[in-house]
Image (cartoon, rainbow, N blue to C red):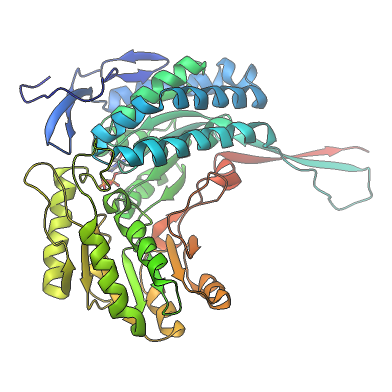
Length: 492
Ligand code: ADP
């Protein structure tokens, strides 16, 4: 631990790599500093995996898939039982996991304990319940009945490399591991370098739950080294990635060399559309949750707020008042609503967008850092935005929202779709027909009507256009971790 290390409010039990069921140092012996974003101080030194560690982890996952008991002794029902056991263990250790996540990411404890953790538990339970319901079909084929029997099987793809981001570290691990384990794959999970801690504690619970060695391997490290090696490894059958679209472009190109399957959950610039006939107080609450939840570090954040002209001024007044009243500060204070941005790099990036915004539009709330320690940024609202401006087109991934006016539903649909992204959208109105017309016309993977950021493990989530490829959650995610095999039998 470095000289600047402080006493963490939660014990960090694990900092090594999980390979083949064992906790090991990296082959190079290297570690990297793990910071608390609320203070900028080092709280742990974490084993830094590189190519050699990825090789070992992939070999372990390969052996577990090809030769281990996972495929022969662990029926789908048994895999479900293990997932239920894991969910129970996570629930039992939820206070500790929530505190670790808050320490690592900077998000408030009220959120990690009452949003992230319950969703993680729900996710593993949902996929536990699906594990023994993954099956093929009997296919009616040409010819006289009884002469040909054709059926499909849904088989696991094999070894999956799962690369996850830092905004919901444990939840993203659950979204990836839950369906892939239910389907019978083996994994090498590469958490984000900013947030390595909760995945490691999860690794301990996975071992405790009784998953055989090598089924889940966890290698922390950097994207350009560990992540890159995973994407290029010939022993990996699929890469499932969540992060920036620019990283996905690199991953897609690298994965092409070995024709890996890929699925991507990427960024967004989601339009949050408020009509004048909406319940404005409800819409203000939704706009607050839409952009400021999780410090704005949310791929589906409602970062473009499109407000009907006649309601614009009244809406903005209420919205700015709510933003200014938001409680920022110590992420471990249960009353805190908004914590720290994840890292200095992210903080600097958001602040540079705020400077761009000040040149392009009018700042009516926030626009500056909060306090002088850690990476806190005040909820920031820009008005007078044109959809062509950079703050309306580029993903900021912070507590910054660009407000635009619109005159009618035709105009708002055009503006809503005028983006490279298509992850989510929301509509606030009392006119249910109008809401559903917009829902049909907007090119986005999720549309919320009179709500925002609602999630359920059963509801598919993913993006159109530059926002992704494939769907997470729901049954769709299990399909993304299976190959379909067609079997023909001649009965004559
Ligand atoms: P951000 O820039 O916000 O950190 P990224 O998309 O770069 O988002 O990171 C998401 C995940 O992708 C992290 O786990 C990171 O280490 C990983 N990553 C970054 N670059 C690469 C790469 N070239 N190949 C594989 N993984 C990468």
